Amino acid sequence: MLDSIIQALIQGTLLGGYYAIIAVGLSLMVGVVRFINLAHGDLAVLGALLTLALVQVVGMPLLLALLVMLPFMGVLGWVMHAVLFDRAMRGGFLLPILVTIGLGAALQNGMFGIWGSNTRSLGADIGNLSWASWTLPGGVLVGQLPVIIFGTAIGVIGALHLILKYTRLGRAIRATAADPEAAEMCGVDARRAHRAAAAIAVALAALAGVFLAMRGQVTPYSGPAQLIFAFEAVVIGGLGSIWGTLIGGIILGVSQALGGLISNQASLLSGHLVFIAVLMWRLSRAWAADHGGWRASIAAKTAAIGRPGKAEAGVQK
Image 1 (spheres, rainbow, N blue to C red):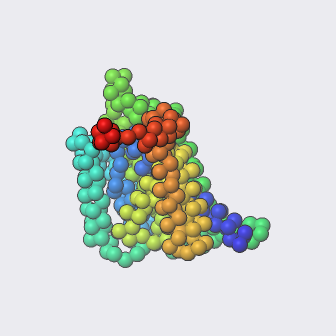
Image 2 (image 1 turned 90 degrees about the vertical axis):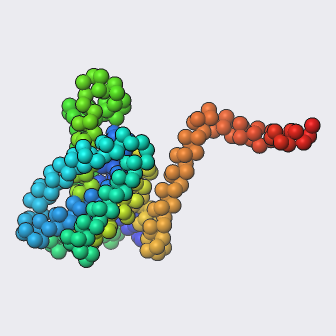
Image 3 (image 1 turned 30 degrees about the vertical axis):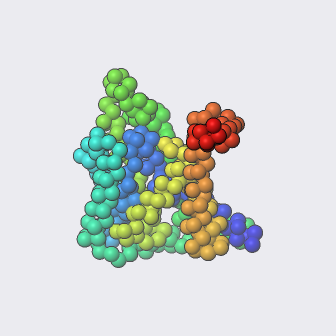
């Protein structure tokens, strides 16, 4: 039993690397643009299917296909923000949600029209990497592909951190995230910073989609499930936190792996339960902070319960 738990902890941690890659772009959009792209998972699937087409139809090597696909998806993210997202954000809170829901539906049906509903995978195109593993002391197996994905997650998040901290574009993005109006007064083009953030987010989502196609299978309708995992990793790690997505992804992956020791259904359920628990904790902590801390808020709530209401006071009189 102990060996199974250790195996689950390792596999869950490595799975968290994939969740971190798909979540970091969503976190960037939330933290910088204050925009939740509900088509994020569908864009990940689009990147995977485009890579599959370049590899299996055109005949490109996988690395070359990635070098072609990722810039294309980045440009697509830039254009989508300029044409759709930027205008939608001017229409209030509800319009961006409706626009991204419609965009997700359009992407799903468009991919279905082009590639059909059959499941597709890059497993056969990466050879032994799809199943090769290392054996650790104690007989614990560690897959090579999950290790590569986890290492890529650390590299991607680290590179993004350095870009945001030390480059001119990164400083513009951080200034825009802190106060768009003040950034505009200092000469920063807030719209350009938002478009750059959207381009990075879409490219990272597409990269995650490729890893999803390597790990398993994708269909045109796989996007919503990936969006849920990305959103849960973002919330667990903290909204707008780049490195928090890695922590949130690991927590989500480990909870799913431990739940998988019980049953396949418990795997997903355990991840959702951890997400709900963290969300409730964050909401209750925010409520307590608004009421002067836990002690003050509990004391005020207790006093309110013990104090008779206006109707009761009138009856007593």
